[in-house]
Image 1 (cartoon, rainbow, N blue to C red):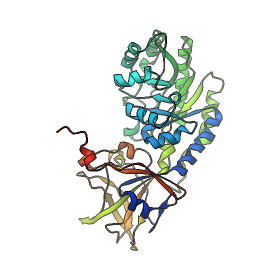
Image 2 (image 1 turned 180 degrees about the vertical axis):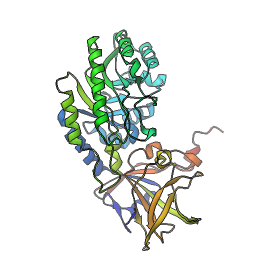
Image 3 (image 1 turned 90 degrees about the horizontal axis):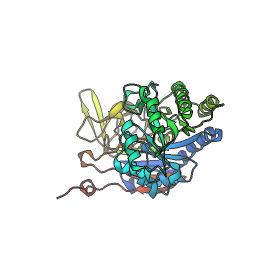
Image 4 (image 1 turned 90 degrees about the vertical axis):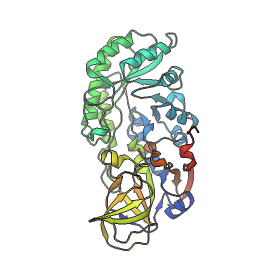
Length: 411
């Protein structure tokens, strides 16, 4: 349900001021909240010797890279675009690693050139392609991503383990893949990786995943390979909204991982994305029109699937506030919808029966996979991004203009 808040603020900055200065849609990241989440992970995991890497795909702009570079976190990138963003933000190469299910030749070259600490190999073809680029006298550090067959109980669109996904080396091929790397002096296998999915609210699949990785690591070490780290991926689930109980106790989870790895020669790592940044993000919209079709009331805003496609892709639901409004009516059912030429329904909410054009709505917990998945469908420009904290605001990405949407066109 949307809670009425006539003149709300984010990070101590009035929403009216943000909208007046930067327009809507507008991505707002409360860096104070973000740093609280980073601190929670550092205290739970890093304190136990478990490395934390941020999954850049969740949200990465240059200012975000700058902020994260000042923390102990590593950074996972999966494209040259993400790598360049990290480099522009001053991220140390020694704390960046490169993922990707279908890396280009240029991306493999970046790994071989040492622009990252190591690459995570996803498939057998990639081994051969990278080996051709690398030199035996300067071997490239790699991990391999193994699909251990562990499946998380989550939406099929964000499930990355098990036989029905494209990710990683299939478990039936894992040992042969490890043997192949042992034959290639150009590559140095320093660890194993496995990721089973996103929005996981039960840690059992993550612990089971670690169990499988330990077995493969023992096999690799038996071949004389220098496997030292096991990365169990990310996907740590978050609650539905403010006030809800957190589904995973980070401290207990970290202790569980550390206990299972005790007595082995391996250090551990995780790579959260959403769990770090989602809570810090809000997405501001203005209501453009309210219309009734049959028994349904549509509240149409000036954004939608172009800046937050997750509700349309796999039913993601974001809590929301009516943050700027003169509405005083009773809550009534409403479908929040976007303006694109699709049925881009953002979700079902209870809105005042007198909500009107010009009112502003803040979608909450949108720090992850909103701006990073934004598109130019209908040639709409992507929104601006601002960082707020303790009453201060900093624009870190300007809004795209209408001209920007055709800047790559050739006349």
